[in-house]
Image: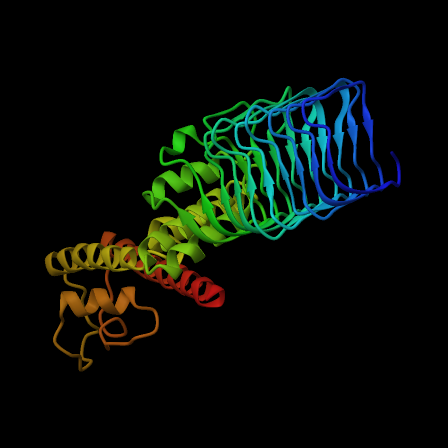
Length: 385
């Protein structure tokens, strides 16, 4: 029926060896409910003013395309109530104004793609939840969805590789909480309004996250659980997912969690650096937490100050004979050694001797190290802000 112009058309309950309706125009619904089609259905480039109705249908074209809806224009594709496709369900660059509804459907294409819909445009929703089962990969690359894309309680079981490819997907919401998934999900460079994942992070399939942008991440779990999810990325360390997660925490006022994420990012990045950069990274981490834990510098300063004050109180440095000098203060003298910029007038006058000279040099070196690490950390944080 290639190129035919039809009104409301129904093959409901029919058994067919195949159906070719490429480039067909249907003024109304195309009804294939409860059909049995052995050789596949071809509606590529068709224009249906109503919806393609597939409730209860069984399309069988194993190892090939069970439904070719490439560039299909319709209100919707409705494949609920026991719809089954043995073979690929292809909706390449289809335009469905009222959504793709596959709740409870079964797609079986173990050696390829169960649902192939790259570039699909849906102003409303794609619903593959509540009993949806796919044996084979699902591809929504570069799809544009105004509402939600749902895989809630779905079963996703590809023979190999990712269960779900959503890179460059644009959607208002993505519900990625399958009941079973034997492969991961590729979310690279997608743009999602609300990303909803499992309440238990251990049930979440591995996610490729580099370049993913989202406005909100649900549910709100402890930051450690989200960091564990990032660490399971099959691509290994990537800086952008950490920055994105920190941005979301900052947007809801959880600045401490945001700093934890950014600190973890620096620690993972450290493993990718040369040995000398890793060594300096360990110093920055231990002293000021890469600038995200500046209170560590105060702890180090107080500990060194207490050590220096104790040592120099017991072993006072001697001033040059016959030279006017201020009253010696072990605390101020230790501060003078520790703080490389501030001068309290003690270090210039009092000179330690013997073993205490090594203590003085140690305090001077530690002061410069703390100051440099603190300055580097603060500069890094301010530059990112």
